[in-house]
Structures are given as C-alpha cells and as structure tokens.
Image (cartoon, rainbow, N blue to C red; front, side, top):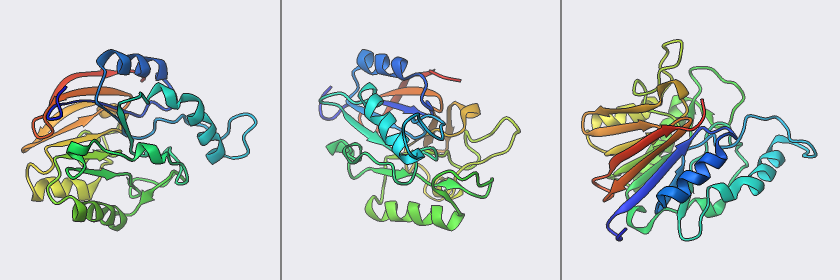
Amino acid sequence: MSMEQLRILALSDLHGRGYASAARTIDEVRPDWVILLGDILPDFSMISGRGNRLEAQRYHWEIYRGDFVREGVITTLVRGNHELEGFSDPNLRRLPDQVADKVIRLEGVPAEFGTWGWSREWEETELQEELQAQLSEVSAPILCLSHVPPFGLLDRTHSGEHIGHRPLRRLLEERPGIPAWVLCGHVHESFGTLVQGKTRVANVAGGYALFEGGIDSLQLTRMERLVP
C-alpha cells in the first residue's frame, strides 16, 4: 500500500475470545493499521494468582498482546467499559502519520442506561466534554473511533432499547458528513453497517471489519463475526 492508501482492520468486543481467529485474520490481510475498539479483554473479576482485577488485566494483556501487534503495523487501542481505568498500553495510543489530525477517539459509555460498575460510565455532560476536547484538536475529523455507537444508530439491544452516545449523534446531525466513518462496537446485537446522511457507521462488536482506500475515501471490503 502506498502512503496515500491504507488497509485498516478494526476489531471490537472479543471479551477474551476469538484471539486466534483475530491473529490469523491480521496475518492474512496484512493491514497497515489495526484498531481495537474496546472490550478486547475478557469478562473476569480475577485470574488465579493475581491480586486484583487491574493486575489481572495487565497480566492477561502481557500474554495475549502479541495476537494483535505486528512489527511495522500500527495498532491503536480505544478502551471499552471492560478495560479498567488504570489499564493502558502507551505504545497503542499512536495513529498513522497520514491520519493523525483526522481522527477522534471516544471511550465514554452513557450512564443513563444503567450503571454496572464498569469503567468510564459517564453522564451526558461528561460524554460531551470528551467529544469537545477531541474536536478542539481535530476540527474536521474523517474518522471517529468510539467504543459506543451514536444514539439510535446500530445501538439497539435485544430488548429494543437504544443505548448509544447522544453527543456523537448530535454531531452527525449538526455537521453532516463529519466524520465520514464512525467505527464502534459495544452493542453486539447491532453488528453491521448503515448510512446516516454522508456518514457511514460500522458496528463491529464481536468481530472485525476491513477497510481499504484513502483516508477520505475508505471502502468497507469485508466484515465478519468472530464471537457471539
């Protein structure tokens, strides 16, 4: 791929499963950029021999990090509600040079639909503050990486309730076409894609999506579930 073109592989909500399939997919498609959209780590309270959940997450990631990271490939992690607040991997905060000023990243989860003790369960004002902080640095984003879908767009649960990100939905309504793509997860029942005005939304919860093209003309070329 040339510097003007990218092959992007986005994954979300594996919850500790499907790692081998994810690793094979990365090796098969040879992406330039791997995006982890949150809840990659498993649902656990402890791992044998670890003193607390945060220590357990760090230990787990030490073991399985290699399934997602390749030499010469940029991997970016957007934390989901299952990645604890203290969990981080500084080397996975990077963006490809050609998109560094075109991407916003959102990790907040709406608290209005229930608080379950997960990380970054925020009120709407806090979600708005996170979004505004990103927009102050990237005024015309091409790509939004958000663990949670925009409200009303690929965010419907089995019960029929919409549990998405209201400030992100308002952005799409107020600034049509900015961003051109929203990549998200969180709501497994709404895996798929749709178009909202000039913006396309891809919810890859429990699987992956492959995109190719220039950053301002990305095309979805493959999408597949890896776990339920």
